[in-house]
Amino acid sequence: MGMTQRASWIQRRLLEYQHILVFIAPAVFVAVVLTGAPLPAQAGDGYWLEFWWLFPFFLLGATIVNTVGISGSALFVPYLIFIFPVLMPVLAPDAIISANLSPSTIVKIGLISESFGLSSSAFAFIRYGLVDRRLAVALVGGSVPFVIGGALLSFIIPEPVFHALLGIALTAAAYMLFKADLSHEEPSTVGSEDTHHVEADGGRPLPDDRGKPGSAGVRTDDGEVTRVDRHGDDYRYERTGYLERFANYSIGGIFQGLAGFGIGELGIISMIRTKVPVRVAIGTNHIVVAMTAVLASLVHVFGGGLVPGGHSLDLATTPWNIVVWTVPATVLGGQVAPYVSDTLDTEILKHGVGVLFTIIATALFIMASSGFF
Image (cartoon, rainbow, N blue to C red; front, top):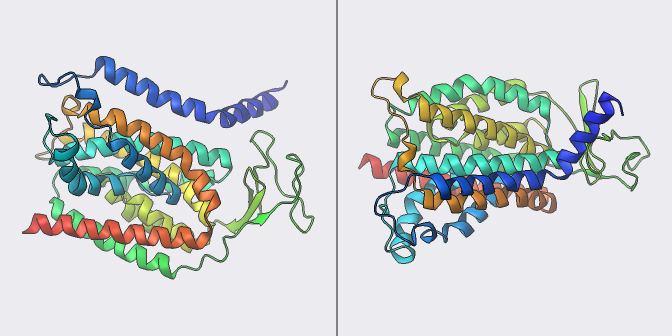
């Protein structure tokens, strides 16, 4: 077996069994937390079971956000601010932490949970053949300085101002999404069941990558990309529209650095508007959001000393009895998302994302008004 064939074989095995690797990561994380995490002195025998009820919500939330390709914190943060304080006195009356979590604690929970969930779903979308790696690399590279800048700004910008700005941005994004024409997105169904010789309906041969499961493959001809997912559906598009995507991902990158979400919400709009098929846009957006979320979390943890009055997150104060439930939930939701994305039609996805943006924007305006008054 030559080097190329060996690399192809390894790639295929990794993609086929990625779900095993993905589920090992949270299992190791939970095991490390249970055996070595620093706990409060008041922690009792029921400490680890106090917040089991967060699992179903974070599972549902992770499935939703990963299906539409946005950041998990876009749902998790409003939930922890508005709903968590209402449910906690009923479902966890003896918990030793405050029902009103501090902003830094909310950011920690969101970033830890989001990192695992996004990574899980990103692997799943890669396995489906729905990630444009060239677009992802360009978008991540262009977003890096804005993410870092936004993360550093988070140490000095007033929270109500940030919440209001992001609410306005998401409202505009929801409007653009409702107006977007997604008729170009529908894939063609490949008739052949031969995973190595897929063909379009008209008999024109389609790309096939022997290193990937199913019929997945990609080819670029004179700027036109032809992509086939593992089920044999093909998508044709061009990578034009770099300037519009750069503008949206730059603004989104600033918000991603500020609070861990924003780049996915604004970025997905620019890809859809520039005629990238919605399922490819969602899959590619996962890579961008996952990588920028990791970068933002690192700056949040270690970058506080770089700005006047800055601070860094203290992991010793993390509510570990919360994240041991939210991390597995987001990983499972990330694996479920591609199946949901694959079964829902374009119109449902489009309107679902628009409604989701509107709900998030409303929550952010409420957060902003509570800070101003």
